[in-house]
Image (cartoon, rainbow, N blue to C red; front, side):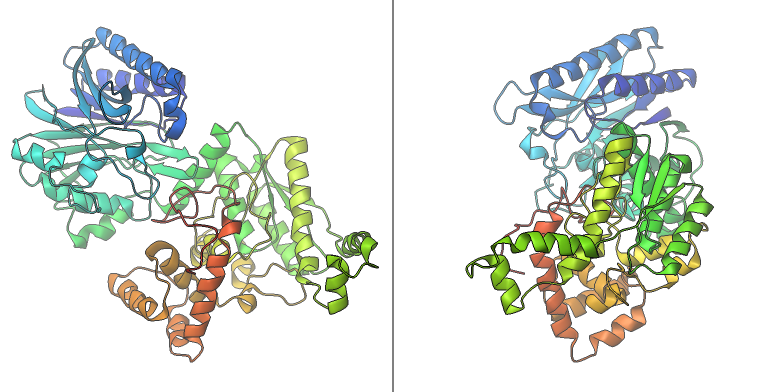
Length: 586
């Protein structure tokens, strides 16, 4: 049996583009005498469509495209089967729609399957829209009994979530003696996700079964889909799609030799990682698609000579080409000469455009405050009261430098038509360690990266000068200012943030237990594990921990106003994390 993996990049509402990609795949499958081609979940309307589904015309157009695909198969060999995902209406009781897959051959829809396990965790909210199905669908293709599943129907085989999976379709197909399962997926990337899929899905094929797992690829808002479509047979990996930067239509013979036998065993975890798409490539894809799908061909960013902006600049150049990237240096009186030199060296190495616009903030602060003193003779006026009592916040004088940089960057964006990028990372965002508007641009490519991950990327990018990632991180808003002096060492801060955000650890003793678990499982969470271990034994550690937890809780209002960025962890600030702004827990 020959299968074609229709790994395509869809966009919600781009019915013409989605159809064109489907037709391209069908043509490849026909040219290679395939028996079946499988496309991703909801490939016709695009994924993640969210509330667009409530527009009647949206669902109508999706059904019209399904009919176009059906009609196109009239000219194909009758042995070729096409499996596509679409939205259907529910005319009965329950939620108004179905998430479905159609099996099409020779101009006929020979079967329709309805997704049964509907995820409602993290970024998913399918129970908002869809009524679950209950029936299996089997068809005979090339003499084999074939079953259809959609994403969670297969993924949740081990009951990994809190809702019931007792009657999950994967097990029911095994009980029915199905030879092959075709799985349509729109599964977003999370680090190590490829291995997780293998570890969960491959053991279920040990009953002389094959699974063809086809996944969407490409960026969509905050999500990036890694593709990584694969075929497993009897627990062995036959094929893994390597491409995550273009539509791919890999042809696989289910009788071909395997790449990795018993791929689900823990000893093969590293082998799977080595052939999987890496984090950096997917960050590039997420940024490229956000810009391209939003209609931008040019990017602008503030480049300070620091590690965060350096990594974002590198990502931008790799995403859309260096000659489409505009890096603006905006030094103030506190900016160091080495930051200027480092940024220029970076821009020269990358080949992007370099600009310098100086920031003169002291005179502006004086002018502003003079205007605010207009009511200074009235004792009940806020300005007069604060200045008289000595409660004036001089940090505001420092932060206005960042606000001016935002103004200048947005002017470039508006005047010349370039998409502005934020350079903030996850650790900063967690602690609110950024000026309020500083992350309010169009997109934040490293928004879901901890500081140690930013550093690791910088160390592996030849164009980023070594001095950029070796020097102490600093916003350079005041003399001799460093990030770690204001917060904690990033070696300590990163794991606190990760434990709190991803695993909801908010007390010190459970945090210590969490660190032990990370060490036992080999999960990297600190740039300097020795420094982290030393800190845990200090008298101030518990108080430090509580201070950071409290700080993170207070900063929810700032995070809520930041721009979208590529999600690469299990819990990211954005669509999948729902925390009240006003609360008393943290």
